[in-house]
Image (cartoon, rainbow, N blue to C red):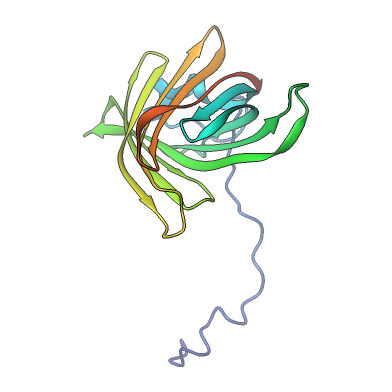
Length: 196
């Protein structure tokens, strides 16, 4: 019989559970089978690492290194994780920079996979962006449909991102509208596949 006392729920003294039992993979040779709706995004799955340049009207330009991991667990979405670090003039790490996690989902029309995508991107600085996008071959173009931010986050109001696989590398450019400035170039990078 389940206890009716909300201060003593049945899970309170339950034994520990095993580690998460479902595999996630950035390597299509191992792990779960790729969901059929993700076939058009297959070239993006992997671990990517490279360099880029950043800037905005309110800050000085900067060089950075970045690692992006795009993986799946067999369901109809991709997990996206990015972490970057600032580089000095000799390409030495200076400090951690932007981090971001998110999910990319293809839009279905009944059972048919369309070229449209939805993406949710979240940063630890209190900004969450909902992107609507379109895939054309190995190119993806995203634009924000909504930006949600915490009370203490920087005022970001819009964004746009262009991703592409070019000669085996992952290239992207990102624009941002923030702190009173319209959509302006913010980040661009070229990353090469290091795993997957």
